[in-house]
Length: 355
Image (cartoon, rainbow, N blue to C red; front, side, top):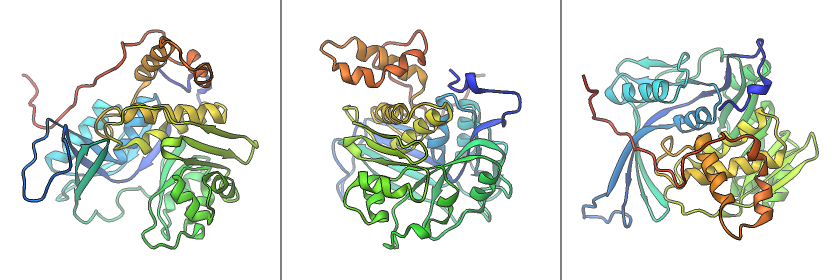
């Protein structure tokens, strides 16, 4: 499904979303009953591997039907070859601006999922110079950027100057300053999507909703994720506010859920949906992702969305208000869908192609 089909025109940019960042090889151990104990050996009942890091976001966007372009450095080892092939051939992501770096080892993250949480161990070598953004980013409808306190990424301003809409998230501020002035590239962004703790620290407020309103002094659209309570958003330009509760699911692994949430919100934004629909869709895609293991492995596509929508309508005593919240899906999802729940095959490294 192409969510932007009604909007496409011959003069449009070749890509819907541009991304840049570091691709990790993620190795995910599943089926652990508890955290590993020092001095003991733990056996996992399942294991999968997939591209991680910025690849989580790229896969989530591509599975939702957006034409996605990724600029990243790949190691010239087997891990790098696997990640490149999985993204380009498996997910249909354009890697034209990406490159393979001779002699550079792919960074690796081992994730252990248990009790709905995860523990991760990562390893990587010093990234290559100017990794990974090109000097001049390609023109796209939108780009997703990870802001870093005190650091400017020149490509963000260059992309915004071309008319690319920038959607940004942010990580934890290890400096403890929590100074919005340090997020210099926020001035080029259309939307900012921090979590509640980050939003309150940056705005010096004690309420995530108040923080969202305060953030609109710096960016047109502020979206604050509230964890189990859902998300709250404010659009300064239209005056819209929206709050959507989280969907209750059995969370197996939260890896990549934040990336999937952003991908869902970007999809709705590019399609021109109302703020409440964008927020509900982002929350739904994130909820679907935590029911699967892994980052890019768990990102849902339209088939999963359609299967969920048809399933919840068949549940007896369903809350009518909840159904109305997602009624916009009726005109979007494919006419047919596989039965719910869905289970995906978990890919891994090591299998040879048959002759």
